Image (tube, rainbow, N blue to C red):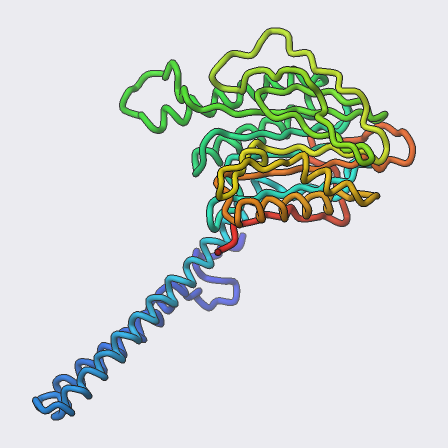
Length: 373
């Protein structure tokens, strides 16, 4: 048996810890600047003189020393900020993963416009997976912003990615999402108030999530369950119409789900037709005079030129949104466009227990940040 001591590689040379060296290098420049200032003050005869020229030289020396220290600190802070943004971007891409460009014959494009500067995601959530039951899509919106909203979105998305494959009916998928949300809110309330020592009766009463579940079968049949979310728009040729006039159920969180969770039959998504799923931030966006953004008019503009690709729809809508809000939206906005490009009817295939089918040409989700105006 060969035993290798901790910290010693097989070559026999001990490993060196780079942290002390980095710290020493980071302190070298401030130490040098400080040494220059101290050496000038106590070692240069000019510093002891009271004439105008001597004072100007002394002020210039200390100004240079102070400027050097400020620039060094600024450079270190910017380096740390870049590293933090890199880590945050990786974490955000794990939560709101890029969607594949094609999924079981559907062309897909999705993007999110964040109202917070420097943020890629917030309380909006979406996902699309191909399962043995068909292509299943979720679009949701968590009330609120910040880290709490991101945690709630992660809980709902994690539950959907499993339940979409496991449950044969959309109603049971929604039940799994509701239980995951309730469990998450209880755990969050317990973490925020650990001194109570009791299970909270109403952990976060004001927290809720609007959710739209959509199922597209192999022959294009559409079924949906809507819990307080805006209905998608159906793009058929040059027509733009809401997918369903049915009243949605209450959002998840504040009220228990009804016992009958039958999905609504929404007709069929025919070849060359598209669905546009969105969060309410798209229709609640206002301009400087308080006028709401007309998403339907923007979509009608997008479908004037045929054929229409999901990517072109996103570009048209987000360009109009940024122009309407003068580049400063006050709420997160997410859009997901699905276009039926199936040349023949075939069943959707998906492996049970996998998050999504493999794709050789992945397409990154376009995270749009608020521009600096």
